Image 1 (cartoon, rainbow over the protein chains, first blue to last red):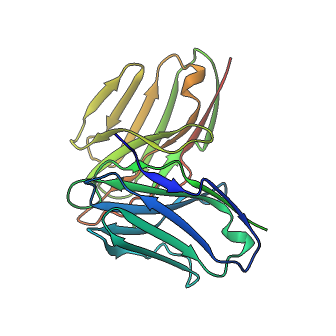
Image 2: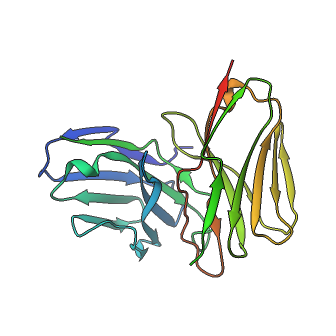
Length: 115
Length: 111
């Protein structure tokens, strides 16, 4: 079975550029999560979707960050404009069942470096 | 608001020694999950505890949920280098579950 697929695996870009991270959840999973991981802050939840609808985006740091889930098999996290402090590993995770209180399956992450 | 503290933040052990990490909450938890993240990898779900006083084992790993459902622990017997990684305990409380992973506990095993 294919797990959660994220792309790209690595991204290096200059500050001010737009960055788009992509995620394909496990087929049949109806919850999707975006996380950011840094040494300082650990693993932080950015946004949670259920049945393609954003349920909680209180973790999104600021207006430069936006996330969409146009269908059950695809989600994007966009940063525009990017800043050096956005450098981190971004994980996407999905889970099945009702509500977010189910085991989550993580993708391999996108390692983002903003110069 | 609810706070869950995971301790210790780091732990160095010699291979063969035991290891325990704790999660302590200021409020009653609906359930608690445990994940492991290897260096350079992604978090992997290990187990979920739901019942008061629940104890579950996975080979050398023992997971406990406190009687008051306010704390949980993960104990590893006779650590091996394959146990190296960061262990997280995201939790649920009440009707809302916004998973909080935080920094977890990083285990370093010296051969």
